[in-house]
Length: 581
Image (cartoon, one colour):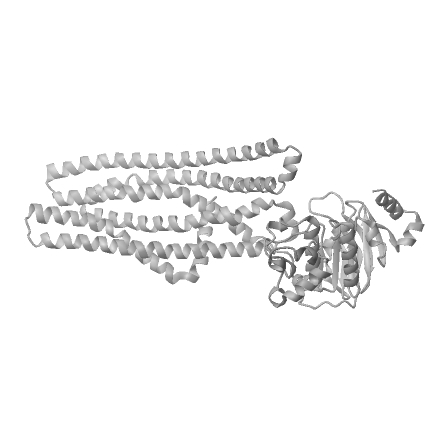
């Protein structure tokens, strides 16, 4: 990473600190005063030796102990206020960055999640942000306090003997070059480390979520090998980071020791030959030199943490700067009085070689239930995903309420759509929170939740749970069966009461008895709504107002069940195959 880019990252981080400038200022002033404690101790050493032990000045016998107590008292107070203040600011900074990143991530287009692993995304919110936390507190504290300490000590040394000070400063350019080389390597290593932390999180997440598949198909060794390979790479990378960091510290300390040796020789020469250096001055100078080593060592060591923080900041800002899904359009309210129209719609997924949909045209009238059927990969779910604008079409148009869906702001469009898919997503919360999910939660009563659950045939199992609708269901509804989870999702769609209803194999996980009851509830629900049904079990859509048959992204047939059976085309073949199953 170039110096210019590093500076831009610093400035951008600073812009997020500005709202808390008053707390930041307290930290800065505290660090400035704290940094003065070291040179004050060195100067006190000069007066103690020259005035008490050489000049035998009695008054200094009382002043110096008092000054010593005051220095340590000020040092303790300033250290407390400085550390607490900068911790407050850094924790606030990290929270703000995490919220910004999360807000942007949940507003990214669906295509982003198709391209990126969930583990990598979660790693940005956890690992990367934690690196910034460490950098924001430790790095800032050390850089400000120790940089000022070095400056104050150098000023003291110059006032005592400028020649010896110049000798001490002669190693600075060499140290600067070595630090620059080390910084570049550390940044590169830490960026790779963060990327691989995301990969290992993803591997672990897949193994945990797919533990049944791992067990039944004997994938233990395969998953272990994947995890071990990535863990070993991370281990090697961390070793390289530590080797680079330690080598840098050792080189700086060696250069400092060589400089000290020359200074001791020159100081002894001036004292013996020219008698121009008092005992107190020499002790203060050498004491200041000794005090320089600790802040220099800390500054060198903190470079590792700084590079981690900068690499993490770059990753975080990349996530914050990702372009959100297109939200152009007006805040309009949808009605169920107008049809949903697909007009010559063509769509292709990113990086795909062929179109998922080609020249698709159809209409779903208000209150009409239209079913989509076809082999897997024929484009059924793609159509369902285009209506709420999860993806943008390549060409053609989709209309609702006689307006192109692009005329609607995404949130207002989706407010008018309820969806139940075959892949049910439930949250680690109560049944009530999952059914009344979204901005409606606060306004929905227990009675409304129970009514929706009854319509979805879910109350029969909810009543048996220890806390009813207030029962926690675990991660993604882990404590519920597949059919129970599906019915919770259907109840969620029922309670939303949206004019457009999309059912993507919504009854796929239900037994025959539950499916019959839920199907009746869904048919009742869809009477005054524009409803799109995608079904694998063709028996569930025989009563649909119209059935559209898809094949390789195109509409090949449409009509009522009996008409399509008589046509002896694609639908009849699908129906026969389905019946045989």
